Length: 609
Ligand code: ADP
Image (cartoon, rainbow, N blue to C red; front, side):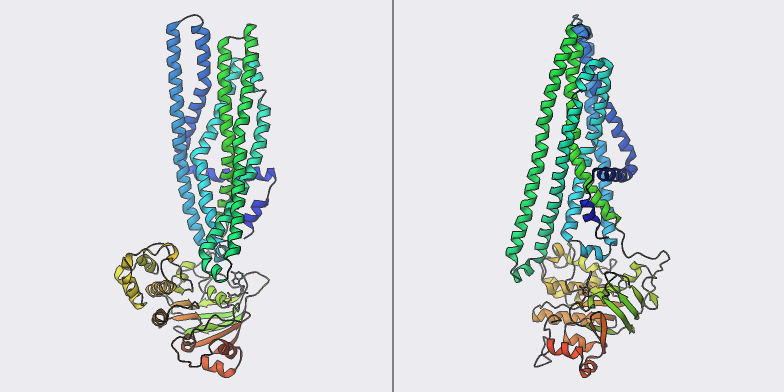
């Protein structure tokens, strides 16, 4: 599944490309269906424009041959009036074809964005964790934008130009086929030139898109990981990698521009040659009396009008190409099946008491490597389970099975007697709360962020939860209290504050089962004890699974599970385990050795070696 986008980028053959374009176009057309009326309107306007462009030069030709040369003033005035009408029609046609097409296009985009949003939420963590978040962002923002450009200025002009061309060609042949043939002799040359250019442009634009993806992934990573980078003294390397990627993107853009900007002058040269052909050959025919001067003038106009739409199509072709590529990537994303789906006959999980049973559970992220092996565990409602073990032992994996972020490979996981695969994800997850190390806050107010736990909660209930979570005090000290905007991803708050808010959120949600990944990062002692107190409050009476780093938590736990290499190797209370003198005792000695065990701050650090 993860191979999708990369794989797509590597396929190159022209036929595949064309087939893909067709498939993408067909899908985009599906999206246009609800707006067929404005599409139809745009199409009618396109025909009007094409017609007026074909007819205009003919009227000028007639004016010369039938009225100017014989001195018929009223005839001339009449035909000029007609010409005025035709050109007005042309203007109206252009205006409305763009307007209506744009209307449909913007609606399609809005639909597409809504669909993407909804889809992302249904995707498994596996996908979201696996792809660089920055690349995903770049894909959504840039690609939707590129499709937008195509809809708002590309598509109607392209179709319009094609029809204008058709109209002009028909008009030329109906007036004089010899001159028409001579004029169109240049078309093969033009097509070859265009083909070459668009090939180069396609390659250049593909490079700009992949390189901008790298750049924004870098930026995104940098923003998220600036502290880590500084701590590990990696800033130099990061900066130089970024400089490289940034330069690659610049070069790709410069090159893409070089290609596109050379196209118009090349077409100008061809247009000039064609004008000369018409004037020369047309003049020769006129001298021989084979056609009239008016026809030659009309053809001169056609040549001008002929190159304009071709220019338009060729230029927009590159826009279209990148829109197709963008749409393809968006569709790729939309096509990703969520790994975890509700069973067709899934039922609503009834209100639970919080009994959890792992029955011989085996699970691996990849089919060939088990991360959890034969895990057996029975937890009565309201009990607290502390999970300890070295890094990579499978602690996080074990708790991520509870909300069914992943499905077990063997065995069953059941809650209150229901296999988690039997019930809807929604009914399951709403009865579970999670408090993770890096609490996720949305941009929005503090109030919104807490209310996320229970959307129907009143302001008073939110404040009550904040009080229970020891968050009320610091919230009230902020400039706008509960109405304070937390900034993107909660960047304005300290880690400790974000944790208190996420605890408040969990208290508000009032779940029967709680999943907690105790923070390892140290916060100041006062916040630490506030958090501790809030957690005690939160955990009371709920079934809880805690990846424990604090000795006090482990001591309070009803059961401590010691995990190693995906297996539960020891279990019991803190004291039982110490007496057994196994891995637990080892870990304990390494991590929690504090001369005075009862010191207020017992956090010693990350598990592991
Ligand atoms: P712990 O929480 O005990 O540190 P984890 O459950 O995070 O351990 O990891 C257990 C094993 O599973 C590790 O070998 C880790 O590399 C692997 N693992 C964790 N998450 C993923 C994932 N999303 N995809 C693939 N492998 C993973």
